[in-house]
Length: 493
Image 1 (cartoon, rainbow, N blue to C red):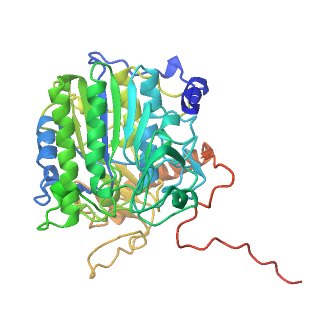
Image 2: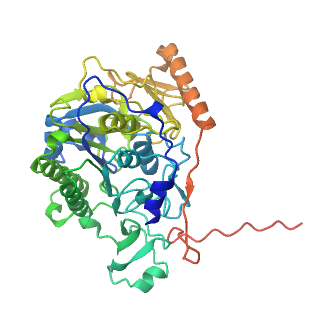
Image 3: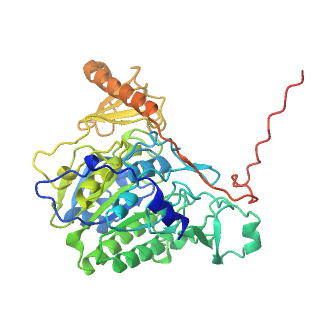
């Protein structure tokens, strides 16, 4: 029995009947779940949000057949924090996670935290993760320790490097004239990353031009193998994170590389949809499509700012939900919803038991189902990332002065508001251009209180990360090209 399997059988999941799934008056049969999570795709990168370049016909068709969420937020403006929120239903600060993990990080997502895969596996689902994990690249933080039956992918961002502590498969495929001796000696280079299967490196370095295609093929294989049983497929694509790469079929010299990469991701979504339809399980399958944060290279327009910012361009994502016959076709939801809501929502739909310990998400099935007069369950959606923000109804509040946050404005002639805080009407002013804080002091007071209360509660109830296990004697995981830090010299007395 593998350590991952042993851990799955022995850890205290801490599920309680009193925290069981919401009971619906007309709950549909529990669905297969496919969760497609793109890396660094912006709000304005897709046709269903108005883009004309790149072309995204498959996503646009998915929007026609399903529901578009216009105000869907993630839990962080960068990679690991965002994935933590999606997988656990918790703000990443509650779980003491770093916003971004690196191959030299020594801590990751604690295996005692209940992930979507943990919950669905316990409910009888077959589970697979295909793509970028980025919640810990060594035991006990790998996907196979977090509820997934299998894993295939690059364990962190594709601009990083390999940690020599990763276990090497006996039949590892080495490329670019590298040898096993090179690998075991600690070969590292920026943008040169491994592919893992389960807990072993099976290829190094990854051929990133083929990675979207290979993820898609792996995902299709899993769907076809598990079509007769309930399954959960988590497909977090490596693209469109830098360095960008595409297969030969999408290497169009007339386009920019970001356009080609987005169009290949769109192709991948089409292949997944076609596979589900061909397998005859469309009516039994929920597919969610979203991104981990705003655009790094592409477009977050008409939103303000990009990746790394808590303005909407960094955390409000292009989002679709598709389940023929259950989610209304060609529909739009403009209520505030978030990636942390996947845990309680799937709990209700899939008969999964929620964890005993507190989570932050809310059930959004009434929104997804198109229930008449359904409203956001978030009176105030608060993020502590960076300098912090609050979304409440149409209002977006920032407890800090304009001009001090990352990627504040692209306009060189812009002069920031002198007000000490910011407040925007996101319905009338989607680009967050006019600070209304001085005109609505009562809203400012309410949202400042919500922010302060959130910070106090999270700070008082943080839970630990897990230490990743490094074998003794392996080379250092430090960033290539960066000298190892020397201990500070003692002062002479």
